[in-house]
Image (cartoon, rainbow, N blue to C red; front, side, top):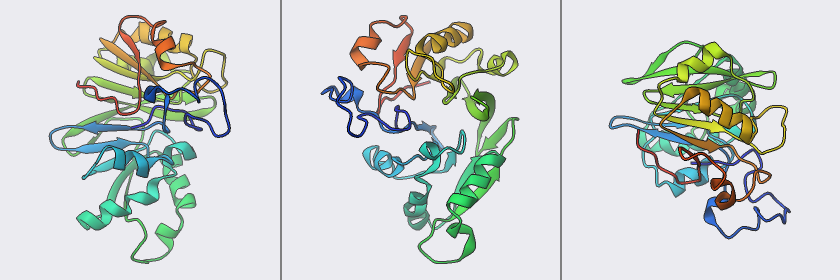
Length: 247
């Protein structure tokens, strides 16, 4: 749904070669993913581009939203679930840890303060670092560190999705072992206080040994899609907006 960092690409007022690229794979909305099974459609994170992403994907049904953490580039678009509320006449189930739920209650306080008919309808499900189910899908949280903030990645069957991380303990990383597909953040080549660099992401991938790995949450500082793709191992790819992967 989106593979860019908090500013997206192109960045406002930036004239770098990535932001001015004519390759559509260099245009990146804020990071988000859609998990589809035969029974369910679940979005991971509803950032500021949520509405545009859902329209672009022509998503007609959404069963739940799963949050990695409470930063605005991952939850700011939550208000737009109203359309699904109205179409299906039911609240939207949302899943997040205590910090996520607290932030949603502050940022979208009007949802919880009145019964105005136009506000979003939310069904809150607090989660902790233990497996839980959405319908018939078992989801295993993977705790990663985003500088000093605890963030959840998620293992869903043979797919592991991790964003906004710069450290993962060995015990938590073991939850990803055996994944066929690993999606992992790689912000840029230079050191960053709260995100994996390209080199660090590749080191994590080498430990997990997935069949295929896809890099996400990339900034314009990483470089152009075609250029960086040539530098990657044979089983590692740059994700891009609109990419669909079967697992």
